[in-house]
Length: 234
Image 1: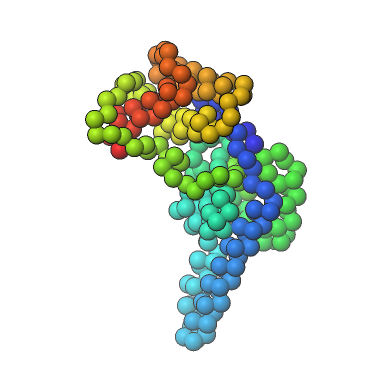
Image 2 (image 1 turned 60 degrees about the vertical axis):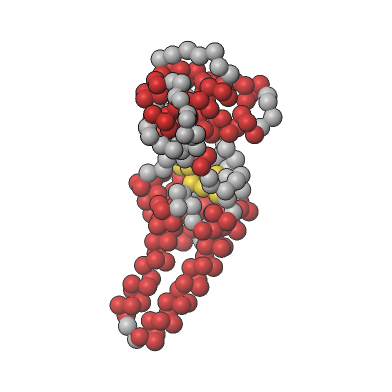
């Protein structure tokens, strides 16, 4: 699956497979079943309709709350290393998560998941109706979320910035740069990865209004560090 970022740099991600989606959903619904069972026992003991209504709210809003506060993941998605991502490379918004949650009623609940299965097979990015409406997709994360998945990076106490022009960049630019750098450092060098590195470097150079003789990997690593330094992030 190809994501086109705001800098017109395409990044490849692996769309979540059907098996991972099903296993993640089964785990989530198992947790919800256990919760509802416990809430039912509590409500019956207290013989209170109000307790039952309040206890059912987390079940209704489970996926929305998880994706908002767990950065696009539910517990099941986190275990299967899946994550909601926007196709333009930006961070999903509250509205995106809300759209996915509202259409989940059609995708999953009303059709027992059949609508989600059909729509994910009918488009190249594996999107269900909620994803199509929100401009998102469910992607595979190959490692646990870490510092790499944020704009932050570690700096030595004596670090001296090289490019003060990083003030012209935005957080979304740095997130894209980190994704590209990770790809260049972890994948075998090919013509495609070389083109990706050069395009990312050129896009940042244009936005920063400068030209550098650094190799793309060194340039990206320096820009990321400089951005963190200039913005006071360690």
